[in-house]
Image (cartoon, rainbow, N blue to C red; front, side, top):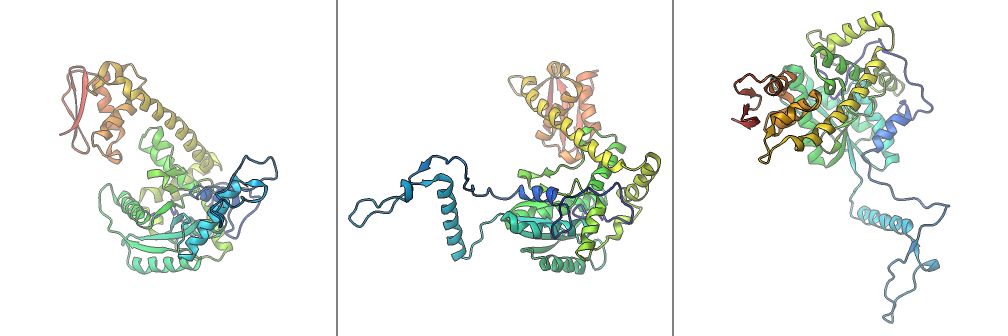
Length: 405
């Protein structure tokens, strides 16, 4: 079962590995990983510049023995950046004396596969330079015999990299949405809980460019819109919790990084099981496309994802702005005003309204939104629609009424 974005790969590689100017101890291209890992870090103290000085501010001076005021520092004041840096250093010293560590915590979700082990190693290496604490979470889905022992072994390897805290968390996988979706839901719930409990600023996921290409093809096969075709975002989740630094790297590069460092990896046999759609796509579908269309399919699909994401973001912003203009004084959607909107914007407004009424976003599919749209564009006196989450939609008096039944 794919876990934490790990997608074990065979000897096949899609496209050439990116050219690198410099690599760190992790064996990975330094620039993409470092910039992404730096995102959750706390702002660094400003450095003094040899250029023009900023206006000086007089530092607070201690009272003189005679009740007056002691002289300020040299030149009558301390530059503002220096004063802030000194204050930060003093605060850090006090925290160290109390045994506290206020650096932001960044966790990596690691299943033990090549992608996430390479990411864990990169985080351990970069954390020292980025002034963050680096920890890890591995999730035991309990779907295979000995999975608990395997999770304990992965946790031990993560601690050997210098990560702390490291936790192995067990979850119970349900059946809703199929085995892959159920495992993903359980995994993200565990990661959310760990991030809240440990106070993590971010959780890093090991999705690669190959995973992005597979996600785009799966969305295309389902006949989804451009939001689905936009694949996985580099930053997602509540308050940007989830980060994917490896989306620009191919899977083979991550595997090579593990080989260079002699990092042991675990290839989940379920990732090669043809019973799962993504596995068939990876081992049969994508190779067939590359054989027919030539190399570069993975890169092209990943590029398509970014283009679709830009378009989807723009349309979502348009729909958010349009939402307030198509409602009457009671807040109900006006069908005539909705009809005047471009279809792509109108459907987004309808989807937003359904989710706001209580329909789960993950269960609200394109066909549901299309049926809602027909109440606007193909009105023939249809009856009420039943959406996921017990949400009922009906057209009444030229207005669209959406509420939980």
